[in-house]
Amino acid sequence: MNSSFTVDLLTSRAVLIAVFALLALLFAGWRKTARASTNSPRRVITPRVNRSPSGVPVEQQPLTMYRRPGITHRLISLGLAGAIAVVVGAVLAIVISFAAVASVIRLTDLLG
Image 1 (cartoon, rainbow, N blue to C red):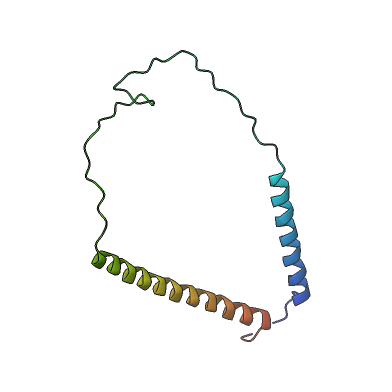
Image 2: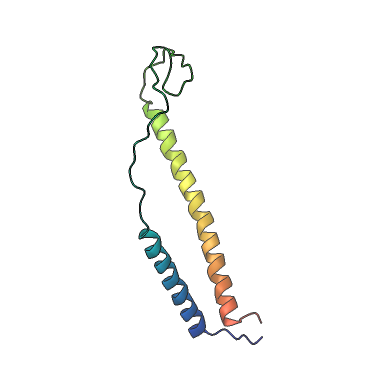
């Protein structure tokens, strides 16, 4: 299987894409920011005692005070976070290795 893509062509295209991406970021950062302006209300609103600033009635209810989790809860959370990290790392390693193998096979035509 003969391919018209060479390593030099792929490298030059990757550099060109990176240059265009940096130029796009540079030009996006140079745009003018919005000027600060005051919002003048159409009518003066008198504040009421039982009304929130958004106009929606708010009901205040008592809540329980914060209680720190116990040591067993912390240890269980730490163990589960470690297990999730191991699973995510394994999945990430599989995806990265598959992509590396696929790119090597594609670029070197080992199976073709």
